[in-house]
Image 1 (cartoon, rainbow, N blue to C red):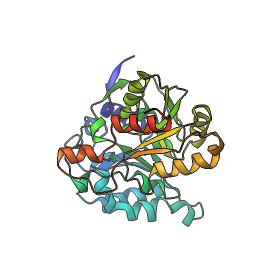
Image 2 (image 1 turned 90 degrees about the vertical axis):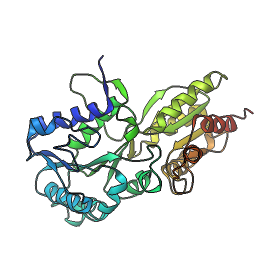
Image 3 (image 1 turned 45 degrees about the horizontal axis):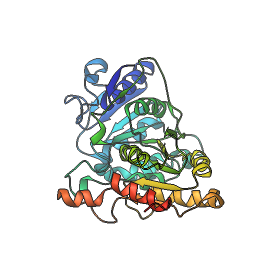
Image 4 (image 1 turned 60 degrees about the horizontal axis):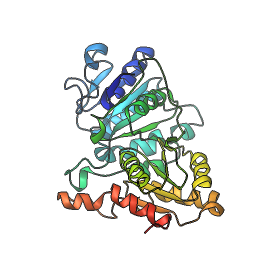
Amino acid sequence: MRKIRFREALREAMSEEMRRDSSVFLMGEEVAEYDGAYKVSQGMLQEFGAKRVIDTPISELGFAGIGVGAAMNGTRPIIEFMTWNFAILAFDQIINGSAKMLSMSAGAFGNPIVFRGPHGTAGQLGAQHSQMLTNMLASVPGLKVISPSNPYDAKGLLKSAIRDNDPVMFMESEMMYSDMGEVPEEEYVIEIGKCDIKREGKDVTIVSYNKMMKLALQAAEELEKENISAEVIDLRTIRPLDIATIIQSVKKTNRLVIVDESWPFTSIASEITFQAQRYAFDYLDAPIRRVCGADASMHYAPNLVDQYLPSVAKIVTAVKEVTYVS
């Protein structure tokens, strides 16, 4: 099977859906003339023209609102934010507009729209450009939240997101755009709301998503050297959350470690912890452990960035603690 980059998988998903459905269009900062800030939309202006690949001013609130209105009127917009950090400015349109539209209109107006772009840390970008906003968006009824970890999942899930009739938050990572992965040339989609077991194991369940999946899988390899068999689950979709797959795994392994780049307070890891103890309490042989980002703003200094973020070593330590290995 061919291998392509993460950014290419996203481009293929958007282009294929735009060829399939004339109501789909892409709008955002630098998506057209510049071929995308991260070259995700490279070549799309040439194929689809300026009416369907639209450059916007640096005004997230403004073009997010245009997208919400367009979705109310029969189109399927893809709104690209250069970073979700900037999308905080657009939260009024996303949360008070897009998420609530179907309910407020008693079903008269849907909002089939995808908001997508990178989030989380990407190195030395400081406090204002390194935030994980997944938990904030996932807390809002009416929104679906997706955060893939590899090119294959990214393409299949983005195609499903574009076809979905609800607003979808598609959370990527700047650090993954060059990642290579196997992606079929033939048509496929991935169902929204389903976890994927990336590695089977019997001693402990490790749950993660987005780029933290790389660390989770690396940690599983290190643990295997010490005869600890880790089952690694990729959430893929944050909301709706496939808690059933996680519970089934915990009932087998009896231990759970969650790796989440987010701040620990009210994180995705917190919600999974609650649901796991609710539905699998009698199966747990050790307290659930979370490996999260620090409960602080991100720093700029490389040594402090390393201290802030989850790491393979931190995951291995957490697993050993729940498996009683010193």
